[in-house]
Length: 114
Image (cartoon, rainbow, N blue to C red):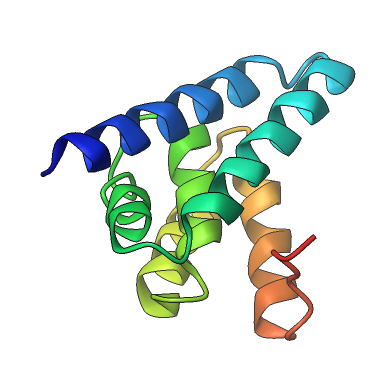
């Protein structure tokens, strides 16, 4: 892993953790989510960015896996859906998010370009 990929992964993961921790504060969570999404849009077309996101699909934290799985869908839909299905099957706080992300993706309505 290159230093750039490591830095990108660290920033992506840190924001995902902050978002997960702020879920009980919608205003704060939305602000963090928007910052995280802007980072995703910046790195998604770079090999280093994609590798950083893919490397987080097995992260121990559900918030990180949730966002990484969603963001990997455009370039690795099989792996992204697999992780989302695992989250959906769980009893954790992200099961409903995973369920609705899968529904939107499978229906062709998931917009990651906003």
